Image (tube, rainbow, N blue to C red; front, side, top):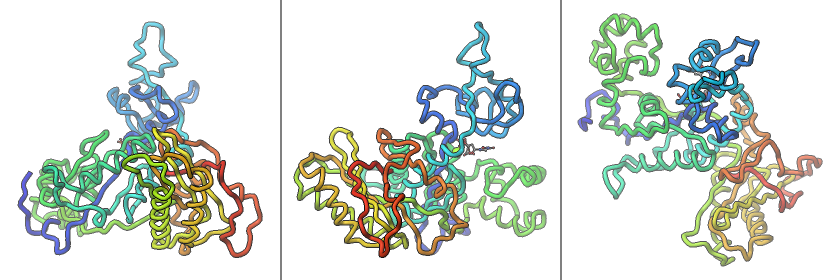
Length: 440
Ligand code: TTP
Ligand code: MG
């Protein structure tokens, strides 16, 4: 793609180019169904309402990519989906089971819990996260990585960072994300959609305009079907056509929006990623190059992790009520322990001492591969309840992190919830030796 920058594009910005990630999960509800029913992997899965015999109403929420091959898609009447892809349960003896759908009913509460796990990772990977929907978010990671090339070749550091985010979601939650990386939000969104499923598309600052050129106008942010039709009648089919169009003609047709669309098509979008949502927990973990049993090595890592997590909590204005550790024993035996406090605190020394106590109590002699520290049950001093979305309401039934330690539908931690609150906060009311809390 062309490397030159054009006047008036994002490429001649005065400041350093931003690095924006747009993360969108692939066939999200279907991917969630596959988490609890792994045998659905590779099968045509349709998630919707009203497909049970005798119902007949309702619509498709989403379809797996296999089901999309049969022409099944989101928002389609379920009757159309059933015509194109019959339910496997309704097949006759001579029908081909490969051409049949596995229909599942929408279970939003479950999908929200999976989404909360994904979003916990996103909040861990970026300081600024804008959650747009249950399966979609923008991350501003300008301060976490760079557009420079990695030492090893022609890939950017930003690409490596995005790959890391993708892999964490896949490994820790078990669902696939497509990610677009670009210097602005509208280009990142188009990029995440460009190579679905399981896509990772990077548009470097100098490539924005050439990347956008062949994209159909419908995909430019802000262009709906009506605008697309009007643009079509003006002979404008692609973002390239839109970028090349006369701005005054667009303005005459669409008002100030016309000028804005023109700028977007030219790769110019100076909207800042503004945050939404709140993390439910903050954690950090660190792996040893070689597993170690040395208690001083382990304590040192826990101290550093505790300081880091407490620091991040403070910088985000978060207080916590649970302090926990994660201990991974080779090969992949994941242990989590937590202590609940009687009230929310912001107390870095307590994070360190609780984490060290939990380590010493049970893992002093243990050979460990990885250690983690987490604070959870967060509350925010400036909490704006109206801005809390499915993220916090998915609080009950959190799931564990590393796939194999997933806990479902329970809150084994925090027996202290049943105890009356004590004054002052910070008293340890429960040594969570046997507790299992969520951990990313
Ligand atoms: P999308 O991200 O639009 O779709 P998707 O994740 O299923 O597929 P992909 O991103 O790979 O193209 O929407 C996220 C979820 O929102 C989707 O899994 C189901 C739900 N949804 C509906 O319930 N109705 C709809 O019309 C759409 C578009 C989505
Ligand atoms: Mg999606």
